[in-house]
Length: 141
Image 1 (spheres, rainbow, N blue to C red):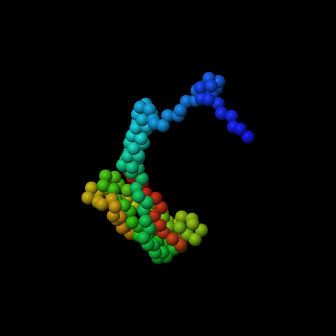
Image 2 (image 1 turned 30 degrees about the vertical axis):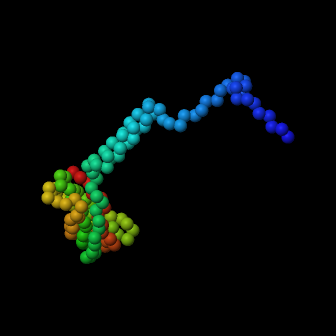
Image 3 (image 1 turned 120 degrees about the horizontal axis):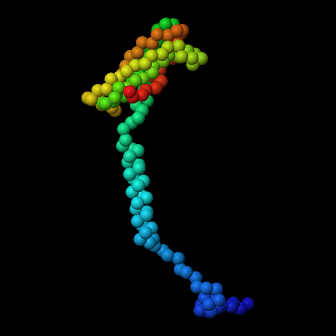
């Protein structure tokens, strides 16, 4: 079988010239890419270095159910240098119903290390025998 080939100029005259694809970005595309990358870096830096809006989650270190009217809870709360930290500490029964509740405040301390938690012992008055005690949530005020 013979292969038929068409000369380039005849082919171009009949079907139009094929454009060769560009292998590099133009000046405008490079400027747009630099602007987009710069905007992403600025946005990431803004999110990473803005002040916290919520304190670090408190840690429950220990709890002790004394009797049906008292539960003792030991929690670790991370202090803030500028704002007071308020936390909820609660005791729950075996059905996860709240049987004791209190709010505690850790005052702002300019000398505090925000990476070292401060241990607080809390006595919770309960309405019935508790099965656990824990720190629930914290917020700034």
